[in-house]
Length: 143
Image (cartoon, rainbow, N blue to C red; front, side, top):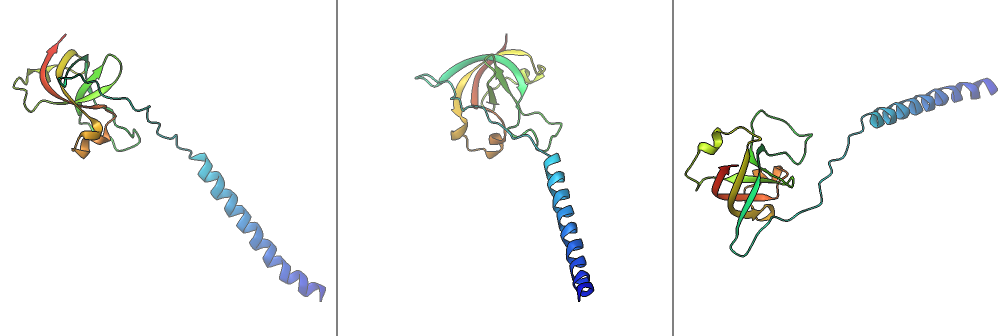
C-alpha cells in the first residue's frame, strides 16, 4: 500500500511544480516589460479676450501626439508652439497667404486669430494631438 500511495503522489507533485514554474515564468515575463504610463499635463485653458481675437508668439512646429507610443509617420501636422510651451493647431483655410508654409519648422512667428478650445473642436483627428486648441488664422508673420 505505501508504494501505491507514492505512485499517486508523484504525478501530483510534478504537476504542482510545473504549475508553479509556469506561473513564475508568466509573472517575470510580465514584469520585465513594464511600460511607462502616458502622463497628460494638467489641463490648461486657451487664451481669449472679449473680441475672441488673440495674438500668440512662438515657433512653427509639428504638433506632438498625446500618446507617443502610437504609430509614427513622417507627416507633420503644423501648428505653433508658444513661448510658454503650449501647442495650437493652425486653421489657415480663410487665410489667403500661403507663403508661411515655406518657412521651416522652428521659424519664429507671431500668429493672430480666434482660438477654439480643444473641447469645442469637432474634428476628432485634432484630438490626437497635445494641443490647447485651434487658431483660425487672420494674420501670421515671421518675427
